[in-house]
Every structure is written in C-alpha cells, then in structure tokens.
Length: 241
Length: 241
Image (cartoon, each protein chain N blue to C red):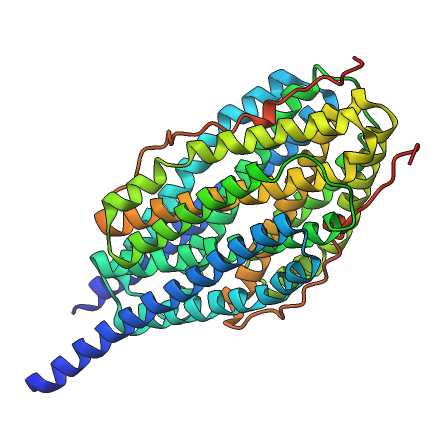
C-alpha cells in the first residue's frame, strides 16, 4: 500500500474515534442539562419547564442509538484491539448510562408537574445540594472520558458517599412530613422518588467513572465502592406511635 | 492454511460463541431466581431469606465482569462482523441489564428485612402478580436470546403494559394506606419502592427483548413501546382533606 493511502486510512480512523468522542460528549452535555433543568424546575415548581424536559428526552434516546450504531460500524470495519477496543466498548456503556440518566431526569420532571399543584413540603435545600453534587460528578466523569484520565475517573468513583448521605436525609425528612400531616403524603412521596431519581443519576455517574477507568487502564476498580445508601433500611415512627 | 486447521479455528470460534451464550443464560437464571426469591421473601415476610438474597448478588456482579471480559476478548481475537458482532454486543448489553435486575432484587430484599418488623399493610396479591409477570417476561426474553427468536422478543416487548397497570394500582393503594394511618407510612413507603423495583426489573426485561430483536434482525423496534406507567402523575387525597 502506498504511504499516503495508509496515512489517509489512519487519519480517517482517528477522525472516526474523535467523532465518537464528540457524540458522547454531546450526549453527556444534554444529560447534564436535563438534570440541571430538572432541579431548577423542581425548586421553582415550574410545571412548564418540567414539561419541556419531558419533551427533550427523545433527543438523548436518539443519540444513544446513533452512538451504538457508530460503535458497531467501527467494530466491524476497523476491528480495533487493545485501548481502542476498550474505548469503543466504554462509549457503548457510557451512552447507555447517559440514556438512563435522561430517563431519571424525565421522571423527576414528570413528578414536578404534579408537585406544582400540591402543598409545599419541607425545604428544597437538600434537593439543590444533591442535584449540584450529582451534576458535578457527571460532568467530571464525562471530562475524564474525554481526557483519558483514569485518576480523575477514580476521584469521581470515590465521591459518591456524600450523595448517598444527602439522599438518606431527604428520605427520612419526607417520612416525617408524611407522618405529621396526611395532606403532605402525595407531595412527599413524589419528592422521595425525585430524590431517588437524583441519587440513581449519581450511581450512573459513578458507573461512567468506573467504565472510563477500565477503558484507560484495562483493569477494574475494586468492588467495595464507598457507599452509604441506608434508606432501604430506614424506619421512622409517627409522632403518635 | 490446511483444511483441518481452518476447521479447528471455526469450531473453536463456534464453541466460544456457545460458551458466551451459556454464560448469559446462567446469569439470566440467577437473576430470575433472585427476583423469584425476593417476591417469596416479601410475601412470607422472611428476613432470613431476604438476607441471603442480598448476599448472593455478588455472584451476578462477578458474572457480568466475566461476560464483559469474554466479549472484549472475542471482539479483539475474532474480529466478528454482521450477526456475530451484533450478538456479542447484545450479550454485553444484556449482561448489564441482568446486573441491574440483580441490584433491584437485592434492594427489594433489603426493604423486606425492614418490613418483617413493621405492621402488615394491605394485600400481597398485587406484588405476587407483578413479580410473576415480570419473571415470565424476563424468562421469555432470555429464551428469545438463546433461540435467536426475534418474534418471541417482540412479544415480550409488547407485554409490559400489564406490569405498569399493576404497579400503578399498588402505588395508589399504598398512598391510601399511608393516609388512613400514619403508622403505615414506613411500611407502605418501602412497599412502594419494592413495587418500583419489580417494575424496573420489568423495564429491563423489555430492554433485553429489544436488544435480542436488534441482534437477530439488525433493526430496532419502534420508539413508542406500549407503556402505561402513570404513577409519576399520581395524586391521592387524604380522607380528611
């Protein structure tokens, strides 16, 4: 093969990998925005904004399909090995995580539409804090993918414990509001599920970080990630019990 | 290349694909069992059984890692194209779905441990029905993968609507139990989340069916899957409101 033709193929392959990276970054940006908007719509009790979040989810779903088709084409035509192969498989997995994140943001937005017509229950501080932490982790995880930065990925992976603590606090606070006044129950239930949605988005950000770490170094992080979600074990007694 | 050596390589590749299929089937069987046991532990309020479900989840996680490593090795060494490539990518995705299913079963089991010490709330019929439907869909989706059966996969995909209906019914029933008596709130909240776990397992079974359909035929099912989860919009008024 003449040298210029071989260089052309190599350059074109690099361009394809670059294009894949760009698609994942664009999808990550959309998912971040959906999460940020879901938190804003919740805090402002803005049903209209929540409705537009629900409508935008299809864009994220379409990007996942585009990335998957692109990855399969790359695997078939380029037959990559070693780090390129791990990177392409990582993009497949990250796209799936981002699609799930989009679904959780959409579900939070749906519940916000209901909340806008319900009585105020408790404070929004915990939700704002939770959403901000999770959004930062998501952003850092995507940045780690873009920069092939395993150390940054490991920092995100280790940073999930505060998310779980805030989530546990919200869960218990909502239980007490329900017990104090039955008129809070519908709102507090939806708020619990919104907090759960944000917490799950945090889990997916952690998964993305694990995937990036594996793609860069080819080995896995340990199983025992710092994790303190104890809400599954939560018991709160009503005031009259 | 002498003919016998070429045949040897082909046979060995087929054996590797067969081995991959077996790994996914084993993982699917484990996930089915975790779900079935989670439902039984819930109905019997059996905290010990629930504890053993929590303990067994690591086995499913280890299988996901084994399948992923196996898929990446196959992609690197065999450089598959067309249907084989789609099958291997499908196995990666299905293993991820099964790992999530294992997590949801584990979370339901954790909550069952709490419920065993809480007052009885409502009936378990809805939960049994929900778990049975979801388990059947999961089994059918894995069978469709084993048999390369796109028509069977499409039937599973279209069969999710009853799951959502039962889930919505449980969600609303639990809200009313909370409103009737504040002492029900802790138990009813955990039961809502258990129902949500089962419903999410159903979603993952549907995702597996979609993936199988794509792996066999190379085209996607439509976006607008029959879906009737309206619980995100649920509002129930307390008796004294």
